[in-house]
Image (cartoon, rainbow, N blue to C red; front, side, top):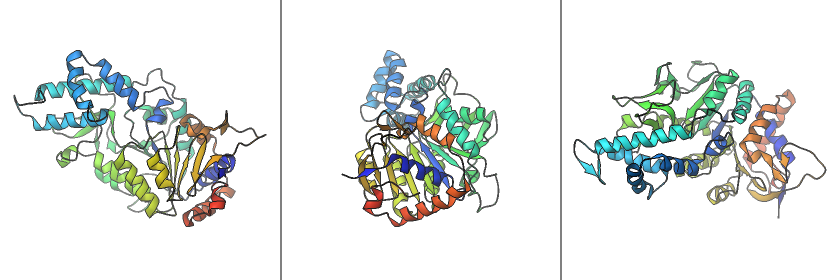
Length: 390
């Protein structure tokens, strides 16, 4: 069975991150927030159901029978959009459906309260972002609703742009999100981190005119937060900004010779999965590196076996250059990336710490570019078994 060298892989990754001419993006899932003490999607769903009163719990249980929390919330909002006056559907009037929507959102807001949480992983990530002086802006995508990233970036003094302009009731500007820095004019400095929240946020709300605005605080009790993209059957106005941000994600993945890091994501969203896999196939000179905390999902392993530039690492094994193999134990060497017989960067806490320790060195840039080119052409099985080229 093939084996991979965890130290060599890490050195190669650091060299590639030091290449300032590359476009770098990061995609974070619920696993990243969990390192700070917040619940993952399964735990969040349990807490939401527990917080509802008996009547609402019974009503929402019907929606959960055919999907997870996000899918149930999407179906509930579809019903809200269809009902008028005294009409009912599944025993719910429009008023009752709206009240249930607000109750579910408030339960989510409460469960994702970041007070007393451990912000150190996100602060380490923000410290790296502060020094990531790439030619093109660093783009951070997340499906998390919480305010961990915003809080960490602000506390670290990192300027960022999330698509909204304003303070008290910030409004979304599609043209600023779709604009490509470096091509469409220098509309905003590259040192502004781009933070794109693909599934909304606890401080987004939809106003009476259906426009989504970002507040300076989480949605108040009695109001529904604009979280999870509206169903595609909604009219176009109800799907902004979600469709715009998902298109931004697609375009970022398709930037030539880009480097994308994926962490804390379980590959449970088929649509987002296809965006990632499509970019891996179409942009063979780009690299996507996925960090899996636990086992590598089958859907990801199958694609990585056919796309050598889609690299996947977990605690015990990795798929590099299309070759799946276990990590070779670096006997006799002490390294923060090898802890208790596991590759530690699988955990976002350790990955963020590693990023914070990364230091740019001019000599690494050329090495990183050479590694990218070799992976883009497809490394041989023998080379892949020794880890990615730096």
